[in-house]
Image (cartoon, rainbow, N blue to C red; front, side, top):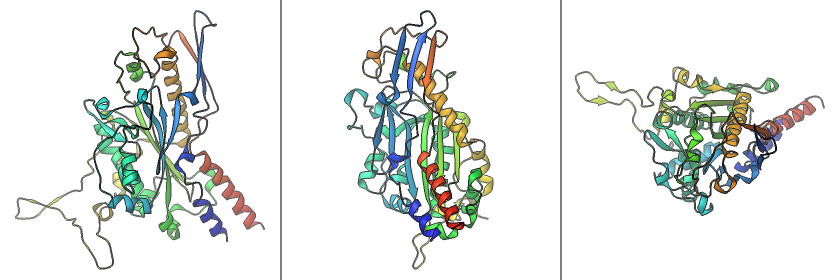
Length: 385
């Protein structure tokens, strides 16, 4: 009976929009100048952040920055198998669902040494033609450095798919950290009966740092300017065990890691390279894919661990990033925020601008945390009944 109740909880709340971070859109930002405290400028974050709900993922789209600050989606083995059969296209489409003045075209995201990186990857959410098109919208892309997009970010996406499919499980299990309140739960490596129903709640997003000045493009006259994030983050939450892990990765060349390509062996007496991995079909089984035959071992996780942070640290960094955005936006005239080109804007500057950020702390996976508390209460009542 207890296992039935746990499975019932795991199957609920699978709408990606319910993964929205708590208190992010509820912030109220205001600023005063050092010369006159009466010169107050303020705005509500809910007026500038729009929640976009797609079939398999959700976005928080900043109308001023014209980019997504957060993306959330659920991931399970069924989605991975369906996405693997879906034809992949490397085409970006303008998001016509957004107002014309805040739309971004693919040509606006051309930067040297930067790729257009997915917030919700095609290999995870593109389960059909419709979801593949939604994942190819420009609103689902941010500028990612090539070292990040083709290295650590690709590997994290790969690990998340391996986890829900059950491949490389022993190595992946060591990455996850259990909350102190999760001690009565089953160990991660011992949940073999739930292999077919593993599900991850995934949150990805961008961060800005005050010392980088990446948002100065908002003060330029070029209307098509799209900011380049200073950092990107990814947080994973197992909806069954409530174990979680978070990463913050710099969006520059320092994010480079070892190559993902499998090692090739030189055959004796042959000049060419011979790969020991080939797709094989066995009666009754689907083709063995490269990522299944060659799961990442523990040594491959050393590069990933250096970007690892606690969930509390990540939530704090998101709040700091929001302050940086508020500080920059409050220095821009209301009529120029994300709609009209900015000409000869007199920025107040950080030294003369005092920003107040009125909101409770940002909280990721708030619904999952409530489910964890409900699950523990249910378990205790069942044990002591």
